[in-house]
Length: 435
Image (cartoon, rainbow, N blue to C red):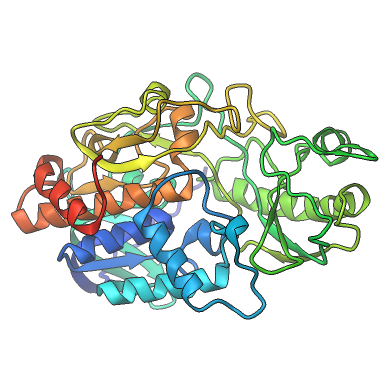
């Protein structure tokens, strides 16, 4: 490969913070709130035009699972405090997301906590002194800029800055590196809610006069699409669709992401035609809106002080160094080879001993200092990851990591040696219990 030697240049140091959060998805928003509310000066940096990640720009239909999440509750409460006149809010859709309302709610929460916000800005490098992170480098319309910090929390999903800092990782499934497929969420209008069906999992079978829907989708949709997942929105007649699908995509590779956007967009007309022909209540539906970013489920799993396992989840383990509690979901492993549920996945038939905790060690990389991970890139197996990667659990992880970062800064310790009793006390004061 031909190489170009970039000339050295001086860039301005734009600011200095106790904590910088890279990435403004569910984990990043919660991490920034946890740090700022615990007394740390905090900057959150996001490359899109809003915070929330899959909550907002990713057009995710609903908050998934039975997880009790403080940040989730705060966002939902703000959204429902001033509902739109056209919204239908009832007991059936308490976890459904109004994406535009959520954008405003998150802006308000971050501003209220005193978080410095920066949008339209990509985190592109780290500043290190030996093995310790001391800041980041960003690129935006304002040019290339540097930002100093005492702790960096990588909430980018793919651990982009952790990689640049030298943190070790593996990719995808153990053994072959296969990763869950990506999906481009979209919304449709014109659905007759009085007759419509809403299959919410791969294991939800719906018989119609023309056949069972999941079987029809596998037969008729362009592969690797081939399943039916439909979710009501807060607006009557609008449905969020989780049916585009592409395998063999590395979400940390720009060429793969480009291919994913093109292929998934091209799947949508065929999906809409399928819905109109075969799904009751969808005879007059039309393509309304597409997510701003393709949804990436899995890329890097970082090597951390502890790796969460499927058994930890099934046995509902409580760790002494826990920083996220009351997590519960299933093994939502999308088929790495095509449509539907992977052979190792379990959705509605999932059974465990109860909700589980996530230990702080999952957020601490084995080598790099002054760095924490939060969100789906923390240390965990492929199967465990399919459970903790969902938004409420990522938010719980982020909140705990943010509090830990602030406590470490306040006490003058490294994040690796943070006073966990103080972290737990602070989380308890916020309303996060260890029960």
